[in-house]
Amino acid sequence: MSELPADQQALVESLAEALRSRGLRLVTAESCTGGLIAAACTSQAGSSEWFERGFVTYSNEAKTELLGVPAALIEQHGAVSEAVARAMAEGALLRSRAQVAVSVTGIAGPGGATPGKPVGTVWLAIGHAGVLARSAAPVTTAVLLHGAGDRAAVRRQTVWKALQALLDSLDRT
Image (tube, rainbow, N blue to C red; front, side, top):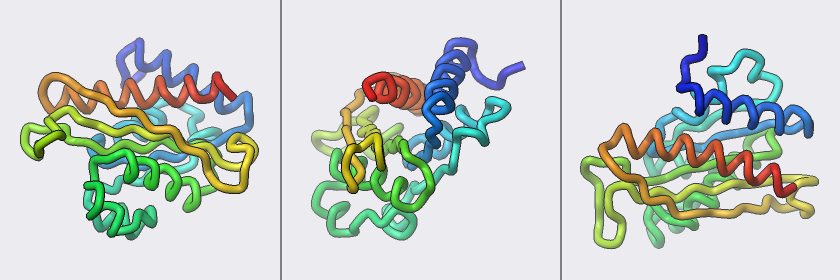
């Protein structure tokens, strides 16, 4: 019996097949979801074939120490920003053996909102390395999400959207 809702389990299974069929491995870099994306991926038996590792970098210091996100970048743009989400995905790729990365950084609530960044604001980035990137440097894309509801709802929505964005990115390669 799966630990995930049926629709999310189906999404993880599709992602697993897409990664496996291409011989790719995934790395996650999570802030606001606190490892829930990695947990969703590893809920599937056999995920060690395609899931390489996950980083939970909740604090700004962790983003800098574990992923190499420049402190100045965080200071300039804020932890919840496109620039930081991209840097997290790229740092995860550089610090793993994976070819595909997903990162999320956001404000799940109930507190933490700032002017221009309400609760539910999440930046999600997908990074591709190596052959997928068609260059020596990782190639990342980022999208701004607007979650709704309470903290748990924002985190659930973010996990769902991250898994779907990963699958969509592989369909385009």
